[in-house]
Image (cartoon, rainbow, N blue to C red; front, top):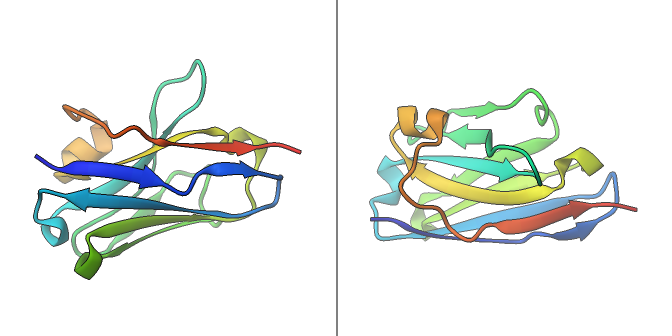
Amino acid sequence: QVQLVESGGGLVQPGGSLRLSCAAAGSIFSRNNMGWYRQAPGKERELVAYISSGEQTNYADSVKGRFTISRDNAKNMGYLQMNNLKPEDTAVYYCNMGPLLTILTGHFGSWGQGTQVTVSS
């Protein structure tokens, strides 16, 4: 079972940037697809971006052109670079890893603690 620890969140003004990190242990990192998700208060968790084991990327329309997902297989780390942040990006951000169908549905058995991102002036 993979253990995931997200970090890098914080309070940022609109238009600002943050880089989230996802540290993974307990799995064959390079063979797994990885997704970043977010959950805003009162809303369901949504998939923001994912990167396949072959490093193909895909983004939700709401973040396309502003967010960049990447991975460093040598370090078992995943990243989400977030630029031009907007108040509607405020949420707890989570990462997870697994088969592509599980990435797309978000039906994981467990989640990390997430990292809070707050965009506010």
